[in-house]
Image (cartoon, rainbow, N blue to C red; front, side, top):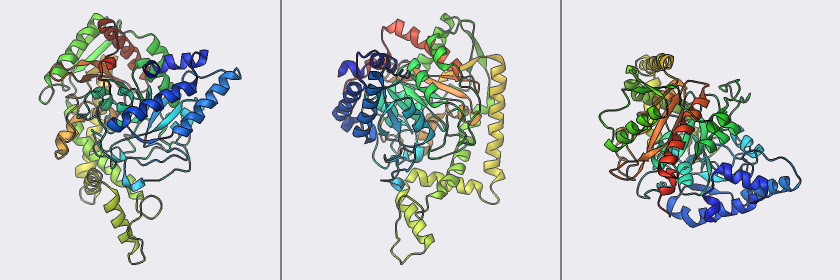
Length: 497
């Protein structure tokens, strides 16, 4: 079992296609791993054992019939519990949807199934994707496999923890302000936020519609690229979906190079609040890029300093609108419907019982920002700042091919450390938020361990919209250089559970 769960997704798929392993063997190995360690980690909210084995058997039958298998056929995956899955619970980490079983699959779910990817189950997350630590889940926090007393990032901490604890070689996350990249950084894994609109949002429970984006999570850059290719592409069911070809991400991941590329370093992405070990590893990464043949260009993007403030007006405003549908009348939780309460009272009682503190906080912030007399002062002003951030990116990409930065200002913090300090929690997304506001593509990959706590540090790579292949080209080159330097991927250093 140990040998199977340590394989990359690409290696696993090759062994299944050649008949060296069966998809059922691979699935059973990962289900056994989940059973062995997930009580400690709590990466999964729901494990679909029977469904996963049925999918695996179907792959084996295809191979026996001589049918050609796709690049990820039979490879297990952990799916963030924000995408609808027909016949399997989708809770979004909230009591509001506890026990809800969707009648349809999200487009992303359909594409995974069509590619014969084996869905193991649904992963834990901050409620409605609102958080940076997975502590806001109504079903309890997830632990970081490097140190179970630390957070695994958020909101997609369940997916990142599943990867880092070898419970799955692939996972899906969503990124509204950094919820794929920040968990990847603190767990020593790879996470990609594709260009906004590149992956369908149909069937993804909405938090902030102009920011939310699904994307691939993996332990290697190539595995992330293979998954990216499966889930991306135009979807007529999603009005924000981009009708454009998927960039050649797999080809880029197989031919990583930074030779002759211009790489930007933004001066706003360092300073007060950044952990010394994080900056040390980032500076070493910049030197490594120089050694690999890149030209380093210093950039000044002054509007980035306003990104956090703008985000925490735009995202709560859109959240207050999107979550209005959870009224206790149509689906999900219903409280007080005993014939003695009006419809308005039922809605109020249901929201009081169903939403957690962070969700309520953001709904109230957003409702206030959108209210009469305050719209222009708050939401309208934040959208103007968003335009300035987009322009700063446009100017930057006239000078460079990609931008690099630390993914997060610090390594994983202790569970409970920032629970009562929302502002400290929000600062975890300092480096990731500008990309969501502009709609660009970005990746986080491991760049070493911080010397002061021996926890993973993430390197963020940012590319222009629709140039997602640049992420993989640079990421693969950096990853290969790290592997050559240390002899193995950093994730191998994670403590066994």
